[in-house]
Amino acid sequence: MISDVFFIIPPTADPPSRLRNIHPTDLATFLDQQHGVAIRSGHHCAQPLHRHLGDSASAPASPHLYNTVEDIDDFTRALNDGQLL
Image (cartoon, rainbow, N blue to C red; front, side, top):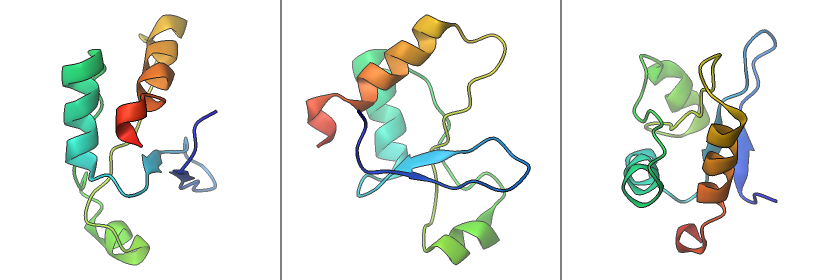
């Protein structure tokens, strides 16, 4: 189980997610350096949305056709890493 994940679900889009209390850039760096998992971080040309949500950036997980089940498992295990708590 992954706790403290906030989902933003627009009606016609895939749901991005974010962890509360961890800056998106720090999260992306941690996942890359500690687990070899790459995600994007930043404002993604969505500054008005971030202002509306009270955030300055996000770190969306964006799986696509080229990702494997193992990639998703690695990402989930990385998010459950005790160092993030």
